[in-house]
Length: 69
Image (tube, rainbow, N blue to C red):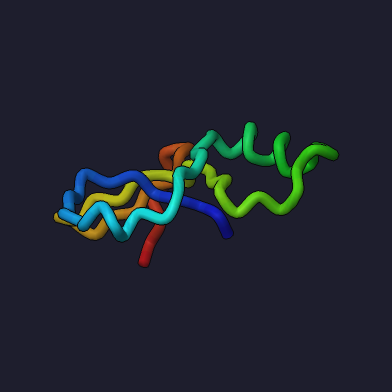
Protein backbone atom coordinates (compact mmCIF):
# COMPACT_ATOMS: atom_id res chain seq x y z
CA UNK A 1 0.00 0.00 0.00
CA UNK A 2 1.28 3.48 -0.93
CA UNK A 3 4.12 1.97 -2.97
CA UNK A 4 5.12 3.60 -6.26
CA UNK A 5 7.37 2.31 -9.02
CA UNK A 6 9.33 4.71 -11.19
CA UNK A 7 9.27 4.14 -14.92
CA UNK A 8 10.49 5.70 -18.15
CA UNK A 9 6.94 5.42 -19.52
CA UNK A 10 5.49 8.74 -20.66
CA UNK A 11 1.88 9.75 -21.03
CA UNK A 12 0.05 12.98 -21.71
CA UNK A 13 -2.66 13.98 -19.24
CA UNK A 14 -4.83 17.04 -19.18
CA UNK A 15 -3.89 19.38 -16.33
CA UNK A 16 -7.46 19.12 -15.02
CA UNK A 17 -6.85 15.46 -14.10
CA UNK A 18 -4.31 16.45 -11.43
CA UNK A 19 -5.99 16.55 -8.02
CA UNK A 20 -3.09 17.50 -5.69
CA UNK A 21 0.61 17.18 -4.95
CA UNK A 22 2.04 14.16 -3.18
CA UNK A 23 5.28 13.37 -1.41
CA UNK A 24 7.42 10.40 -2.46
CA UNK A 25 10.20 9.27 -0.11
CA UNK A 26 12.41 6.23 0.39
CA UNK A 27 10.96 3.24 2.25
CA UNK A 28 12.93 3.84 5.46
CA UNK A 29 11.88 7.49 5.61
CA UNK A 30 8.27 6.46 4.88
CA UNK A 31 8.32 4.03 7.81
CA UNK A 32 9.80 6.69 10.11
CA UNK A 33 7.09 9.18 9.12
CA UNK A 34 4.23 6.72 9.51
CA UNK A 35 5.44 5.71 12.98
CA UNK A 36 5.61 9.36 14.04
CA UNK A 37 2.96 10.82 16.32
CA UNK A 38 2.58 13.67 13.82
CA UNK A 39 1.47 11.24 11.11
CA UNK A 40 -2.29 11.40 10.61
CA UNK A 41 -3.08 8.84 7.88
CA UNK A 42 -1.68 11.10 5.18
CA UNK A 43 -3.07 10.08 1.84
CA UNK A 44 -0.48 12.15 -0.04
CA UNK A 45 2.57 10.19 1.22
CA UNK A 46 4.11 7.39 -0.86
CA UNK A 47 7.39 5.52 -0.96
CA UNK A 48 9.54 4.48 -3.90
CA UNK A 49 9.29 0.69 -4.08
CA UNK A 50 11.39 0.18 -7.21
CA UNK A 51 11.42 0.51 -10.97
CA UNK A 52 9.31 -0.79 -13.83
CA UNK A 53 10.54 -1.19 -17.40
CA UNK A 54 7.50 -1.03 -19.72
CA UNK A 55 9.46 -2.47 -22.68
CA UNK A 56 10.32 -5.70 -20.86
CA UNK A 57 7.60 -5.75 -18.19
CA UNK A 58 10.32 -6.18 -15.55
CA UNK A 59 9.83 -4.98 -11.97
CA UNK A 60 12.82 -4.45 -9.70
CA UNK A 61 12.63 -3.47 -6.04
CA UNK A 62 14.50 -0.42 -4.72
CA UNK A 63 17.06 -2.91 -3.33
CA UNK A 64 17.70 -4.28 -6.84
CA UNK A 65 15.79 -7.55 -6.41
CA UNK A 66 13.80 -8.61 -9.52
CA UNK A 67 10.10 -9.35 -8.99
CA UNK A 68 8.74 -12.24 -11.03
CA UNK A 69 5.26 -11.66 -12.40
